[in-house]
Amino acid sequence: MKPRILIVDDEQPVQYILGIFLDGEGFDIDCANDIHAASDLMSVRRYDLVFADIYIGSDNGIELLRQIREHDKNALVVLMTGLPDVESVAEGLRLGAFDYLAKPLVRQQAIATARRAMLCKKLADENERKQANLDAIFRSASDAIILVDSDNRLVQANSVAMRTCGYTPDHYGIQLHSIESGCQGTCRPTLAAVIRDGNQRNIRRLECIKQNGLKLILNFSASPVIEGDGRISGAVAIIRDDTQLAFLEKQVTPQNGYGGIVGRDAAMQRMYTLIDALANVQTTVLINGESGTGKEMVAAALHQQGIRRDKPFVKVNCSALSENLLESELFGHVRGAFTGAVVSKIGRFQKANGGTIFLDEIGDISTVMQMRLLRVLQEQEFEQVGDSTPIKVDVRVVAATNQDLAEKVRLGTFRNDLYYRLNVVRLAIPPLRERRDDIPLLVEHFLKIFSRKFGKTYAAVSQEAMDLFMDYPWPGNVRELEHTLEYAAILCPSTVISEEDLPQDFRSACHLRPEGNPPANALQGMTLEEALVKAGGNKAKAARLLGISRCTLYNKLRSCAATAPDSVRVS
Image 1: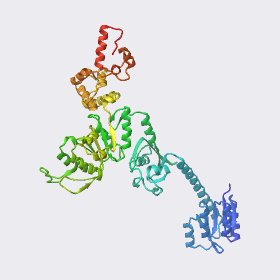
Image 2 (image 1 turned 60 degrees about the vertical axis):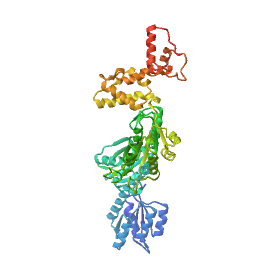
Image 3 (image 1 turned 180 degrees about the horizontal axis):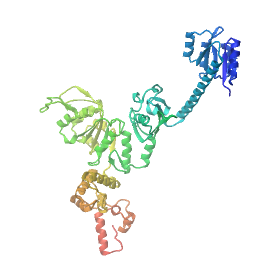
Image 4 (image 1 turned 30 degrees about the horizontal axis):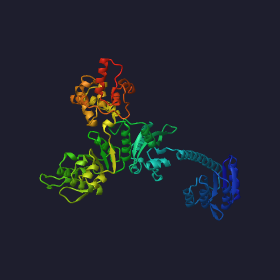
């Protein structure tokens, strides 16, 4: 299509002469004698360029310029005047006029101005098309898209990025590191690095914790924007929210460990999910579990997975201190509060301010300490020993015990109001005997630790030693397994830990262990041969099927070998 030009002038000779000038350049020309006629034409046709006299009879070309801007912001306007007026010309340029020409018009000047205007219009239209395409991509993309310039100033962000990263249109033109809302972590310096060296960067499973405590799992990809001359003019980042996908993967794929905890048993998987759910909820958590199950590790995982991870994690063993010492340790004391208090001391609650305090063996504290602890939980404040000034703290309390607190409440040795305050959410850690399938995983984990600790490679444990591990009830749980393996690792002369390397007390306990009753699902009259076939050759599993110890199974097998019977039945 030919470029369209509208000439607005109340002098017919000017319309005629300018029309002749521009018609020879291939323009489609329309003319109007006044503003009203020009408005009528512009209401039915779009013009690329308008030549308008500043004074059109009693009308003003400046007013026409305002109307054109309202009608079509992309149309370019060239003002004409026979009486150059600096103020009028300046006002016209301020309102967006492309140029102005003085009358009488000169052919070459008029044509050159029209050509420059059309070139400018072409570039502006091309930029607008590109921006429209970019806007369409930004709007339709389900991922967050962020565009920055060479100075790392925010140029554009789609609605997903605004929701995910906290940006707003008011942030456009501001350098990312100066924007207070949104992410302050990995994304911003990564974009700056891409602009600096021009290398693309991809970060999988980036953990982003928002200011409200919400944790997102993101995939981040940033690439430089390179101009035709090779110059880096900015960078673009695409951020995909994989939080839900990561959650579903956890449900489908068992985790071998979590936050330093080792185990893939179904009960452990449920515990991992619960820790995830509780990490950023600032409620009190009560951890229940036998001695050696890893209550402190669970408390540390709760702290490390949440928004308090950069704040203190303070541990207190309540059973290791007397009542007076525990009160001073928890709440601190002022100088002279008691005999020996020569200096003031800050308590553990104050040290944990902003973070988490872990109260281990909470069931052993006295009723007086229970009352003081209840006040901290209710009001988030306490008083130092020897002082009556309240101290406010922001502390998350995680407590642990191997005792039945409900029974202690029934017996009157534990306050029921404190119990309900502590037991808002309960995390129960299963004992090792209830997750025997985790024993090989734990053995492998500890062998790696001891290999580093003792500077020696421990490849595995023998099948006989593993059978003992699988059969033993582990009253000391994971801690007992760790200490047993550490003893064996110290004495083991080779890379494989055998039964002979295990502590004598442990081996004796295995051999002297009384036989249990057969499981409810065990078949009465099952032979050793049938049990071994059903267990796939695993002697420990066969022993469990028969309801006997592994040592008894070995004794029966040796007896069978000596007498060579066809089969041995277990009643």
